[in-house]
Structure formats: C-alpha cells, structure tokens
Length: 222
Length: 245
Image 1 (cartoon, chains in turn cyan, yellow):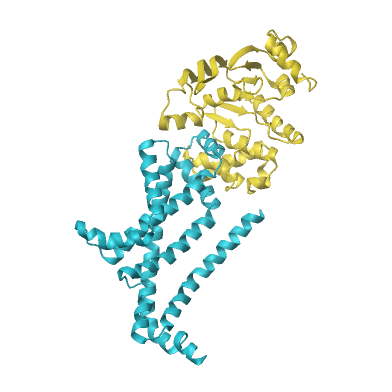
Image 2: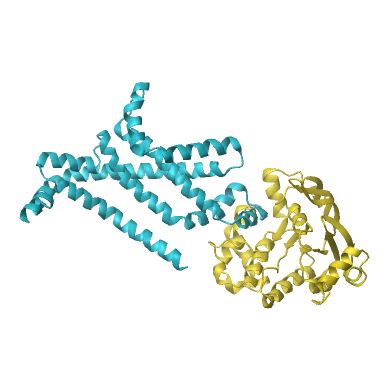
C-alpha cells in the first residue's frame, strides 16, 4: 500500500514537479483560450454560411463542416505539424496545434450554432424584420440570444471537449500540461506527476461537467 | 393611403393571389374575411414584404413598398406596424425591452426617449404595470396587447393585424378587440384579417371578402353581412351560422 502511494501519490515528487506542471498548465490555458475563441467565432460564421440561402456560401461552409468533423483531430494535427513542412510551411508547435484544432473545433461549434439558430421560431425573425430591424440586427438582438440559450449545454460540452483535446498537443512536443507531466515522470521515475496532471484536469473540468448536467436536468424539468 | 394594384403571388406552381386591387383610405378600418386558404394572410404579408409579391405593386402614401431594397425596405417597414397571430414577443427580453428594441435600433431613438414612448404605449394597452415582466409571465391576451404596443411605439402610418385573436382563449379575445377599437377611434388606419365577424360588423368601415385568392366582394359591413351579392359570400356566411353571422 505504501508502495502504491509512493508511486502514484508521492507528495514530495508532486511538489518538485509542480513548477513544471504549472508552466504546462499556463500553456494549456492559453491554448484553450485561443482555440475556443477562434472556434466559437469561426463556428458562428460557418453556421451562418451553412444556413445561408446563397449557394456559393452554403456549400463551402457545409463542406468545411463535414470534412473537419469527419477527420480525426490527431490526424489533422500531425498533418499540419509534420506534413505541411514538406510544402515549405514550417509552423511552431503552438501554431500547428491552434490551426489543427481550430479546423476541428470550429466545425463542431458550427453544428451546435446551426442547431441553435434553427431552434428559434421563424416568427421571431418575422416580428423583428416587420419592426424595421435589419438582418444583422435581427440576428444579434433577437435570434442569437435565443439560439445560444437553447444550445448552452452543447456549447459547454464542446468547450469541455476542447480542453481535453489540447492534451493531444503533447504529441507535437508542445510543453502543455500533459507533456510537462510526462517529462516530470521520466525524470523522477515516478507516476505521481501524471496523477497530479489528471487532478488538475479534473479540477478544471469537473465543475463544468456538473454545470452541464444541471442545465440538462433543468431543461428536462421544464 | 395603401394602394394595392394587380397583386399576384405564386408559391411555386400554386397561384395564391390573383390580381388583387384594394385601396385603404386614411383612418379607415378595412376588415378582410374569407375561408382559410383564401389568401388573406398572404395578401397582408405582401404589404410589408414578409412575402415577396410575384407581380403587381403596393404603395403607401404614394411610395412604392414593392420597389424598396435593403435599408429602404427596413425604413418602409417602420411605417407599417404588424401584429401576428402568434404574438412573437421576444421571450428573452422584458416587456419594456420588447417595446423599446426597434425604437432604439431601427428608429435610432435615445434610450430614455424610447423608454418614455414604450411606457406611454404600454399604458395605452393597459399594461404599464407589466413593463418589467417577461413575456412568459403574461396571458395570451396580454402578450398580444404588448405586441400591439411594440408596433405602435414606432408611430406607424398603418397597422396590419394577421388574425390577432385566433390563438387566444375566448375570454381573452375581448381585451385585444377593445384595444383595436380604441385605435380605430383614434384614427389609425388598419387592415385586419380576422374571423371575429361581430367585431367586423361593429368596427369595420369596409369589409373585403376573399376566396380562392381573389377579392370577391367589397362593401360596408351592412352590405356584406346584410345583403351579400355573390353566391360564394352567401355560402361562406351561412357556414358561419349559428356563430352570429
């Protein structure tokens, strides 16, 4: 038993590893902020494109969404990081991760936004347009607030997925949380840093997951 | 005031409106009746271009509604208030915010000006005390009166009512009709699509009977209900018996 605690819950080693893991956590958080920010904006634009009556907007958007929802994010990441240099495009690990996950993530956010926008009754748009609001004003003032409220649990779930997804960045040697923890493990010959990393992910995501469950229950009750 | 000339509307191969001609004078309340599917609502929705007419023209005070594009159409719609069967209040905004939104965003009124006007209009429909309520907290009749206030706050030249009481419980219909009657007495120009025949008799200046996408008969309530000329109108009115027609 004490052997088990030594190997997985060694507080000394966790203390030694903490500065490194903290640096990794900062990178993970930066990555999340950039990928989620770009994903939300890109997803919204893609959703609007996919819902547009204009074919030249609709079909590229739908194609983009389908393609990047179907491609595994790890394949995308390795392609962007290791494949693109053959075309002369050398990217830093951070940029490669941002680009690969933006492509994947904006496609997912686009699907959520699309469902949200479609859940708002047509009468809302008609009422807004009939009072002289323009298309953009109608979208911003009337449709989007309701759309977002209707799909809030899905938006949050997607956000949780992104945070988990960023751990894939360790594959391209980006020193985010998981990579740092694994480094610490190999230096200390002890798994405690990995456990610490897992606990940090849990601390960030568990409240979010709880929140989503409560939302979904709330919706089920109403 | 409103002039509809040779209005036609097709949905695909289906002709919904055929050569509609109609004039509505200032301060007049024109009532449009007819069986469902006769094109009444479509005609009304063409007047503010929620439906795009296939051909023909609609003028408001001599200005072409049918030629407007983009911002010009948005500005034109400010002059044409519309009330829907399903109310369509914004559920995420308070009653006051519902009545203020287009005033601020489309008419570019200041917030304080818009709020004052909104409160005035809510008072007008007897709901000033509900200003801070959310739409979901109101009865259907109250929601519809807020929707009327929302349209009136923009100072429209004409109000279009698309079956404003059809979605209401019978005991709530009266409160909405009362507001409409009051509007008429103040001289608002109104076009009303509705099945409230008693209200038509009592409040309408003229009644238009539509069937199969054409205007079959136009006349005063006395002429339309007391002395229907066409066979189709007689048949329609007799089907309404014994509900009072």
